[in-house]
Amino acid sequence: MEKMKALVFHGVNEISIDEVPRPRAGAGEAVIRVTLTTICGTDLHIVRGGYPVKPGLIIGHEPVGVIEELGPGVTGFQVGDRVLVGAITPCGQCHACLSGHQSQCGHGGGYEAVGGWRFGNTINGAQAEYLLVPYAQANLAKIPDELSDEQVVLLADTASTGFGGAESGGVRIGDAVVVVAQGPIGLCATAGAKLMGASLVISVDGDENRLRMARWMGADVALNYKEVNVVSEVKRLTGVGADVAIEALGAQETFEQSLRCLRPAGTLSSLGVYSGKLQIPYDAFAAGIGDYRIVTTLCPGGKERMRRLMEVVRRGRVDFTPLLTHRFSLDEITQAYRTLGEHRGGVIKVAIRP
Ligand SMILES: [Zn+2]
Ligand SMILES: [Zn+2]
Image 1: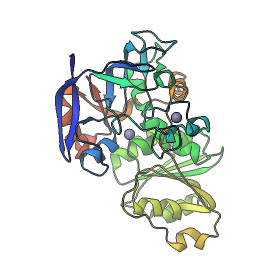
Image 2 (image 1 turned 90 degrees about the horizontal axis):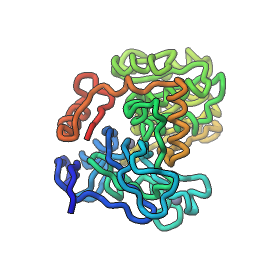
Image 3 (image 1 turned 30 degrees about the vertical axis):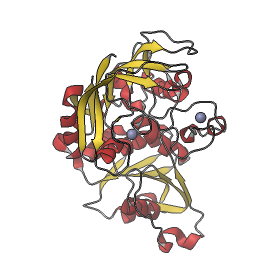
């Protein structure tokens, strides 16, 4: 049996590069040789035990690669094609997919919360030399020749999710939008709010390096929550409060702050992944009669989503490459996890080259 190198999750805080069997493509599947991937905050969460996956799993869900093998039934692609595959791999056929909720694609034909998230969750993921792509017909997106791997790798998850926050929030031309937390997803939400026509984008974080990057990604105002009262500053800048608040961390504090930044009848668009209990104080919520809208979003995936995002980059609307601050080989990936986990050297995203 042919082998490959991959990052294997063995248990909480136990990961290593192992030799594992190389996948083969069955009907409807493809195998890609991974040429670039990255580490998501969710992977850190998995390694630290905050989101359980089974020991022995290869983690990672942001693949760029070259088609190595195509299973029977996959048409319109050739071995050797460069492809981007979304973090979420909808089947395109089930009840959820055909109702337009691809991220909640069910494993058994129906709806299932986070069901469409398979890589590094329910099946082997992308931090490996090769990756088996399920439902390949719906999920392989050819990369235009003029785009490099680094230009597209963040579209698989980070940018798709960040933009999704602005889209689900229904940002309209002329809106005032506040984006709370400027990690990679929040930075992409900042860019998304700008792209959707917000006239004022206020980005919030406590790290000056990230606030600088927020301005580069399109923030008109970058607020350091350690230095100013964010809620009163947003009220002062907007007069009434933000039309849309995007929460990009997943904590009680940031959720509540996002809600308090809104004008009545505003929308809280939540991207965070929460644990424990989330509470809504009655005053932040106008006791339930403020006509607030709260929406949540899991990363949109599938080849059409990837095609659209690649067009946004190809047409020069946005450039995510400045977010790739550090580079590592697959052999050095545990070092990359440490760099990211300890926020070393102004790291935002790491590029991992198998
Ligand atoms: Zn992710
Ligand atoms: Zn489906």
